[in-house]
Amino acid sequence: MFRFVQTIATCTILAAISGGVSGLAQAQTPAGPEAASQPPSTPEAQYQQYCALCHGEDRAGYANDDAPSLNTKSMFALSVLPLYNAAYYGRPGTTMGPYGEDMGGPLSSDDLYQMMMWLSREAGVPPGRPPANALDPVVGDLAEGEALYQENCAMCHGSEGEGHGPEAPGTALGNPTMLATSPDLFLKIAITEGREGTQMPAFKNMLTEEDINSITAFLRSRASGWDVEMASYDAPPSLENIVLNPEGEAPEFELDRGRYISSEQLNRALSEGRKMVLIDTRVPYFWAMAHIKGSLPVPYYSERSEFLSNIPNDGTWVVAYCECPRAAADATVSKLRELGYENTAVLYEGYAGWTAKGFPISVGKVE
Image (tube, rainbow, N blue to C red):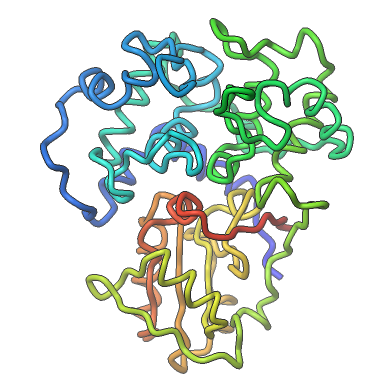
């Protein structure tokens, strides 16, 4: 079983959260449908064209479709990354659509990153390095958290976290894409500090920290579905069993540019029980938050000798995915091809794109 050094993982992702999205955008392979017209050149102009209709010209929110205020400091207290993910991948099942070019939207990764930086400054939060505990899991009592949620949160966010409706106008807290791309501390800060200038109160004045931890932990447990009776936390597959469906037939992938497969192709292959190795190249914390079921966490920076010794080089397909959406997976697949593994592919939309399209996920734990 893989064991990962959490300190290294945390340092790596903190660098990405605090300032790496723009750099990652440059590392990605340009793709996606061309916009009908070029977007405006400044973040403010782009906001007015694409966001102001619902979030308001002054970013105060609730202009249409219960879109939240983007003027609240607590929204950006952790980092700009959760808001970047929300804009890039959207919130399936809500009126918030995806604006990233890989999801059919008009804006590039860098466009959206610069807009989030601008929004953060406008909200009074100069973008900076997140706190050292930015990726620490929040531990709480799930049963107590569920009871506290129903008592304090359901009236605005819905009894099943559905939100965005006439009877539950708050944010959709049960949205899988939101939960898959928002660290625990982002959720805890929102509950603790509220959203100033909105109807979302600061629960630090009403609940204990232990209570807030339990609500946060309960929300995290809903990442793979609100209606699960008991959250199931996957352990990583053993290195001796990294081949999914070893008796299955090979996938029939059609590679784009000789490298990429779509979420639809991967989901179909998994549903059909096709034989493959599926690796998650993100840091282990993200795999634990939520991942494609059956994937093995192999961070892009890790020592791969033990992993490589267990991959059959007999034509078995190896599919890699990451968050950003391709940089780490691209690097991993390039290395595998250098070593003679020909049947390799990268999930084009990345993990967040997978969840945004509504395909199944699991939550997990790493040792």
